[in-house]
Length: 146
Image 1 (spheres, helix red, strand yellow):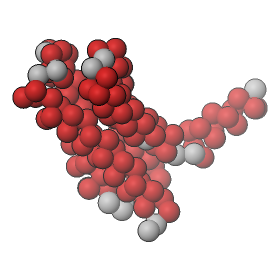
Image 2 (cartoon, one colour; image 1 turned 45 degrees about the vertical axis):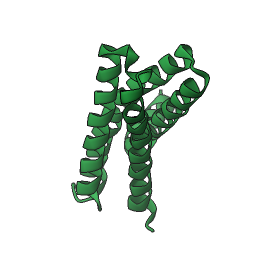
Image 3 (cartoon, rainbow, N blue to C red; image 1 turned 180 degrees about the horizontal axis):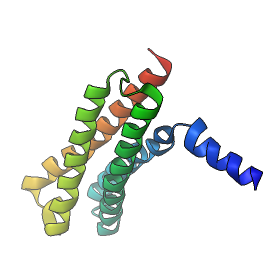
Image 4 (cartoon, rainbow, N blue to C red; image 1 turned 45 degrees about the horizontal axis):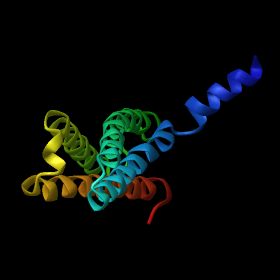
């Protein structure tokens, strides 16, 4: 029983939860962007669906990372983490962007294959990966400095 208590304590109290969850939005947006590039290159609907499902998971993971980030800011930094305003703005932007991409694709699956919207859709995937990466970099600055 003591081992289980120590494991729970390590997960909840010792290690920041945000550090464990923040990697998912970065990876999922990156993989989604990569799959979308492959899908457009190969004209593959299966790869495009894989990109879409990765972006769906990215939306969910952004929510989880935001909740754990707010919690860690309150618990570890007493609400005064450096760059918190910038990170909140970028996280909200990432959430809105990924959600708009997912809802747009869900409502109109041909959005990817229509030349007029393809570039904008691809740019949205690329921007979501850039936003997630910048957020990860700023998190590293908070923990480790420049």
